[in-house]
Each structure stands twice: as structure tokens, then as C-alpha cells.
Length: 413
Image (cartoon, rainbow, N blue to C red):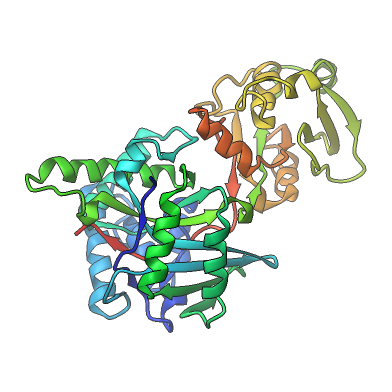
């Protein structure tokens, strides 16, 4: 049985939520975060990326950075900008972007479920990023940003959420990027127990976004378990902060690729080799793929549609038949010679939120030679790959909107 349980959240008061809530720590580098927080003393980036409050020369993984995050978190609490709820609750968190709203349940998932694969993953983690979040959790003693989980829809849960959101939200603000964030508190014990019981019958939860955060929660939770001679399994360190969205409501955007060169080939030679992998159709304007098996390509001020060979799409493997995997195997590696996209400096990735104009800009500037616009991976593909115990190709999914940090904080004790 999957565990999803209430907790006593630390939350900003309604009139401070917009000032406290911030973009996730991992969508901004340190310089961007320093700019982001100018004139925003309450921004949760001071906790998620505390190096922004220290000298630029300091290693961002120095212990002093995490200590600063702990100090900044405590200051928000001391100043009344984060307030602990009196009892364990569940919460509904809604995000509205471009007229579409997704409703997630906020609560705590289980560290044991993470290790027992009742919470399934589809990405590899990088050791340095995993260690960073582990140290952040250890020092702050808190999960300061939620893990984005999904699951196959359960009608009873959707109906309960539909009933809850008929009441006015406790928090309601529009962020600077135009995304609306709302939250409701579920205080009724019968509803809380009902939701937890229903979700307990779900086969699995899936990490949609936040693999490094979930890995850190799992690692630190297990450390606490082993270190406590009186461990019972009910301590808060056995659980981690998560937002659980039904799969039908999620919106995965394209995650596009740009390559620096054609591996010594002329454009004509490249196009000639490409004919063995796909049907090439000249596009009158930007080539936004409209279906699986279709890729947009920008080369020499021209857009093309690439219709990947059917034999590639029919491969009986949930990973190898993904468009991003076919592009990598057959074109980026097979023709351009980019072997490992995780380590190569000849490739970069551009989230779909940036639009196809960003691909044009990167190529037209001379920084990159060719760009590929992808059809988005589906949520069902993500779950099927995780069910099979497989790992997706790097940079296969781009979720929007992003969960805001600082709206909910969970302490480990």
C-alpha cells in the first residue's frame, strides 16, 4: 500500500505568500537567483539557494552555505512569515497557466515506499546534485521544496478535491510569470483519513519532477532510521514533502535539442545521410511537431519536418521507442557523433517553455549549428517506463508550471 499522510506544514500567511513563494532552486543558477531576489527579502530562494547571500567566491557546496539556508529559514519563522499549522493536515494546491488548471494534493509520502519502489523513478540522478540536496536537508532539518509526484487517476479522490475547491482558497496569488497559485487546507479528519485510505490502494506513485530531492529525502531518511535506536517508523523523517497530481491533469512540454556542429559534414551531406532515418519535408514557417514520430529541425535559416522511419517507432521497448531516444540513437549519435548527451559539450537542451524562437536564436547566433524540436513525451509513456524499471533518455520531460518553493515546508522532527 502506498502511503500519503497529513503533516503540520509551515506556511506563509495569505498576505505574505506571494512574497515568500519562489521558483524552484534548480531552475536558476546562482547569478540568476541573485538577480531574482533583488528587492525580495522574503523570497524562498534565500533558503533554496542560500549562496546568493554569501560572497561569490565561496564554493556553493560549502557547509557555510547550508548553514546560511538554515539561518534564513529560521528567520522567516521567527518573523512570522512561516507559521506552523496546529494539527496535521492535507492540502490542495492548484496551479493555473494559460487557462489550464491542475489540482494536486499536498502531504507526505513515505521514505520506505521510495526505497521499495512503490514510488517509481524514471531518471538517473547526478551524484553532485544529490549530495547537495542531502546536505541541504541534513543542515536545515527540513524538506523545503516538494517532490512532484503523479499517479493514475482515482475518481473518488478527484471527487473529494472537486468538493474542497468549492470553498474560497486560503492562499491565492499570481506570480510574476503569470501563473496563478492557490491552496486550500483540508482540516476535516474524515476527509483526510478517506483520502489517505483511498490512496493507500494505489499501486504506485511516480516521480514526475524532483528526482534529486526525492533521492535526498530517501537517503537522509534512511540515515535517521539507522541512527535512532528507538526508531518506530512513525517519526517525521520517515516521510517527505510531496504534491501528488492525477496523471490526466499533467502537462508535459517538449524538451528540445541544439547541436554545435554536424560532425564535419556539410549541410548537404548531413541532409543526405538524414534521408536514411526520416522523411524530410520543408516547412513553411516554424516546424512544431504535432504527433509522435515527428521532429522539427532548424538548419541554415530553414525549418523542416522529420518524419522518423516507422521501424524505429515500432521497437518493442518503452525507452528506445521514445522520440528523444530515436533522435539520440539514430541522428545525434548515428550521424552527428554525440555519444553521451549527459557529458558532451556539443549538445544543449532547451525547455519547451522557451518556444521555438529560442531554437532559432541559438542557431542564428552561430552558437549552435542545428536545432531539433520534439513532440512531448506523454505521462503514460513516463509511467510505463517507470513500471518497466527502466530509465528515460536524459532531458525527456519538461513539466510546466513548476511547483513553487516556500508555500509548504516539512520538518524532519
